[in-house]
Length: 493
Length: 68
Image (cartoon, rainbow over all chains, first blue to last red; front, top):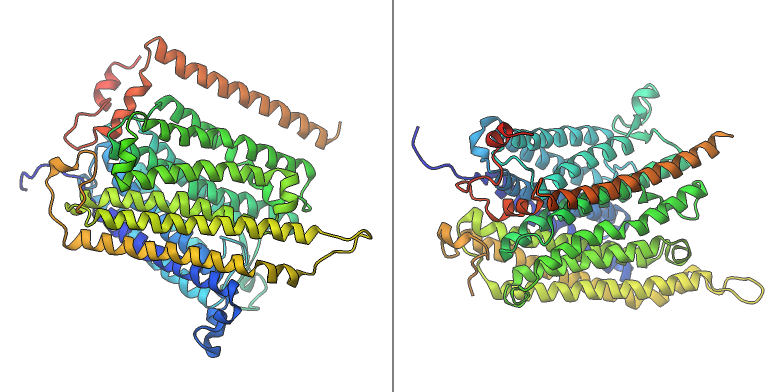
């Protein structure tokens, strides 16, 4: 045994950083293809008529959503967990061979799962439940991977030196528990082949719930996938990375605790807003609306806490592109957590439901908040795990502005498209006859679909800049000493 | 009273109960800070001083000994 001083072991964090970048590009590339397909239907056969089965909108759409949720975002969550977890618990993965083994197993099984998902979705094998498309054999594997992550998570907490769990850890625990519960219940399914005595394919299934109940469980899951995949773990990240990068203590730690418990109590009840004006009981719809509005409080509790953390230090926003990414992320968090509740109000929803405004809302949250925060996290981690400075500050700045422009084009075009669409659908003449047919709306919306596709393309260009910057950081940037890594991340010109 | 009415009452009072719990928690946080029972704000430093060589903000063993 040599007497090397103890260090944090970032092996698994590094691996997940890699999948974050790769799957981010894949997921967003598919998204951009879809956006162009919406604007120009001929793009559906961009790879030729023969491959149209694999390249059409409906085949690619779940690949886009699942790649960005379970590929990009989840990889980002795991990468940051294997980084933040060690640091705030003050214990190294290197101290436990078992935890290290679990972490590696976690990564490789996750990668296998990703491959299985990509293949099965491209082949059109799906349960047809949104964000829960995976068939039962994959679902079982997902549960195994999740449990392995959980064992690693609680294992690391078990051997910690720091008694108190930093607020980010609470959020990671909530991510683990929340998704575990949601995923299990929503994916309860009956494998038809085995129950029917050999009819159909062995991997097919039907949901264990039916009709309205199925819809309710699905949107309890669907909305909380946003909660525990797109909000809770991303809040975990910003509570660590913003204070760390800026050198400022969290403005109010008590507020962070309060916002945490507020979010936990409120979020789970809001899913009903996806089913307004449907066949679910009216009181449940009202509950969905009310809880969605209440949700503003804990969401803004965290977001304002982050902005106030920068109190007196706002010059850092101008000086550091990394801080810029995080401040924009937290601003978009505030923005989309106000927009969501507005859309959940029944009278607004009567107009907004099924329109592109909803798509706009999802993307200002996902692109502006989730992806910006994950990229900022990776930028902060890179110099620490690779022991090299960030390759290019100016490239980061360029990426920031290209992507910000992309998000703005995306959500503004979808706002206009969505509200136009909603107004046209409900317009009628004095006798109550509908004024427009569906195709009338499509031809009016086409220019906005094009703007959206341009916005998405700009965001994807930014992703390539990000990937290039990360690659150069990893391979050829200036090496840095430990004392350069205290707060603000070192960056090359 | 049918089951739906019972559910509605149950739901109403449960919501009220949660509101009380939430406000008690806020009171608890701020009063324990004020009375000096626990300094919550120091936990922010867990993120700021997180090198493996940094002393923990609250060490496990030490803290267990002085447990109230």
